[in-house]
Length: 243
Image 1 (tube, rainbow, N blue to C red):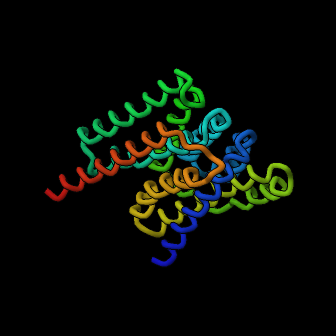
Image 2: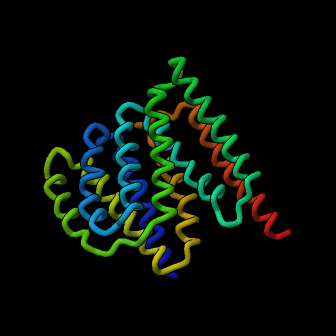
């Protein structure tokens, strides 16, 4: 139990550090965020690793063109996917959740189209699809064994150069994958499922409380509505299961 708590705490810390560093590394993060973890994941990770790398690559490619708060707020769709496609889910709850998500995302896209919200509609759609790929990768994940020394070694020269922020983000990504994978292997899936709620919330909170980043009101409202719908969905499923 103590190890699980430590791994969960490490996941939260890595998430906060990684998100806080996004603003310094957006313009040269994409290639590094995909290439370095790929050295570890692709030789033995299979399709789930390919999906994860594609999701990370697509998500990070859009970061320079989007408000950071908007990009991070889209991660709240992870618990929506978890609730909608859980083993105890039904189509009514899934339809309700996705109706709310589509309405909120459509509102953000409309504001971007009118020029009232920063970023571009195409990149928002790209990041939404990227979050879906990341969830699919996690849902069908097959544990990957060691052999992560080479990616860590490659991050060292980056750390000593002008690419230090990007290297830090990459290290956080690798550390987060390792922590979640270890939790999945040694403990019940409930730990990882709960972290799929906690980590997106912590990531957005890290951006919201940082004075260096601006959180537009529409983004905050959309995030709260989507998170609230996921909580409602889980409550409804629990009520049905109890009944």
